[in-house]
Length: 139
Image (cartoon, rainbow, N blue to C red; front, side, top):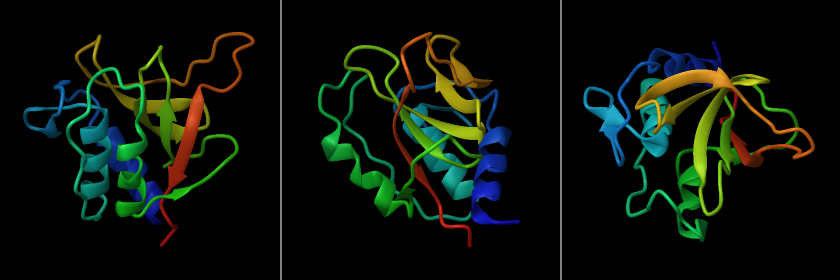
């Protein structure tokens, strides 16, 4: 099994974990950054997740190096299983999700208060909701 598949499977095992802002431990709760870090750790990566962000951030540039530090590289095109997606759910909001299929994501949903498996939604005429995407090397 390649790293991307292990990462996607690890994300799926976290479905149902409670949501907790700045959460980094699946026993107590995860936010979107914590979800990515936890799934990476469960798939064998060593990760140091960023802190100091808010629910709304006009500028996320200081947090983008997390991807490279975690061994992720930029990718383009349709979401693939194991991709980390940067989404914009609303003004000044940025959100990380893990693709487990071309139209399905695992993410830490603040409103539902847990990690969920959901369709990757797009509004008619809005184009892709994906601002950036990264992936692990296969091996």
